[in-house]
Image (cartoon, rainbow, N blue to C red; front, side, top):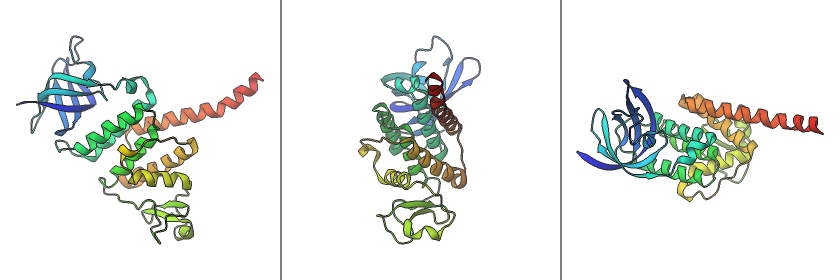
Length: 263
């Protein structure tokens, strides 16, 4: 039965000589795999809408099992800014990958679809892409079975002192209790505070997110540790993001040298 639905393209892969398999995050029916006949053909009229991270309102058939099908595209949403910015594209691809890893196919994911759509709007407005990705990492930890305590000391509950993170105690420790875990993460307290706020805030209420490079490095160090050690997933998009960060750091360290050569 044909129906109208909103969807974000997660990824596509070749199928046979001219066809495509396109996985979409639909608002109404969760993650679904669509069979697109002649999707690789230059004449296929919806080729642009089948590209990863495209968002549109579609008409098609969503089957309860097996493959679904696209008949028409009713309305498209602007996501070209993600296609032209390699950093934004990488972080959005990572967020989509996290959603894919966290949930099984064919279950309703209205909340998460709306959050991804909101994230795209935040990125278009210029909010820091790593901070947005960290938000999703934090929100998805409980889905993966990890529920850390954020924003207060796991020992005494204080929120007014510098905090660090303890993997051993699965939460933040205030300065008075740092000695409880000598192997605590030694994360910059500002980074811990920002992550704690991101763990609690509604994404729709996040009006600004301007982060210093050092703070972002510390935030990434903590979240990467949690996902590597406790969640146990490391997506290809995350590896690419880490490579980008490494390249950017090299460029920053080389700038003073090049300036010195010119003077």
